[in-house]
Length: 398
Image: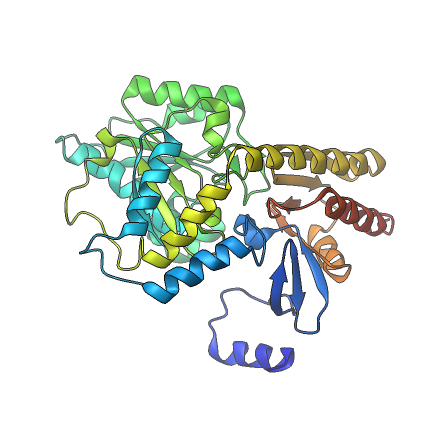
């Protein structure tokens, strides 16, 4: 099919949940570059929205998927699954002893985390069920995760939402304290709010949240769906703040492009789940786990060090543009999750569109922030090429 035929069929057959999509259809990818059906190349600085951490066409990943697909793609969780156990052991070691449950997405992982938090107290006969989250957060698009996502634009069309979720200001420990009740079960937060424009949690705030949870006997849930699996330069972003969450969630980069999510919890928290409390037909299937096992092996200290170094280089080059153009308000982020906030009179979406024409993929997050979340294998030369393209675009802005 050509692009026009694909667009027409999409309009007729697919629910219009993505609005007016960018009129590009990618045929294949290699390294950090995607190629559309006409053969045009695009350097991907979005990484499938922080998913394709190893880029495209990684030989080891495709081999792991191919070999597993030839043997066994799916079997029921009523039986033991070797690759599932192998991945669980790897994450247990990487996290320092957290038990895990596998699902298929970040939203599912967060749903599981909320269920576990409530079950933890229910099992003890304690009437705690409220979950406090941050405004402008993003935890998924299921009913419970929308309730936790502190953005009215996602919540209003689906009222009434599940009860027991409270949204408070991010980076404000006073706002959190004022929301506590005898029924508070957990606090869920992101160390960096990616979807809201790469808004970083202040270290003193994150430390205060952790200390408050310990003092009040409240569970701390860290949503690592976007920030985890090396994206910010450490395997899990909470390591950079010396946090020890009771529960945390993973997805996106975990499978390198293959759908998989995970709930990880301290053993004393995880053991609140009893047989039948939670489950998934497809979660932890052999194919997805084989991909994730390979990804976890690739994300060694050298790879994580590269993420940090490349992230600093990207920020420094974007910082050069910030010094040159007054409409750039701030460059921020950690590792290869970086945001460039623009003045409100500048259209970030227009810049994204112009960058695409020049062969670069990025997006606009939050109010008006360009978000960069490229594959970890991005090169300095590719970063330099992006800076040249952005500079050319910015010179046209009056």
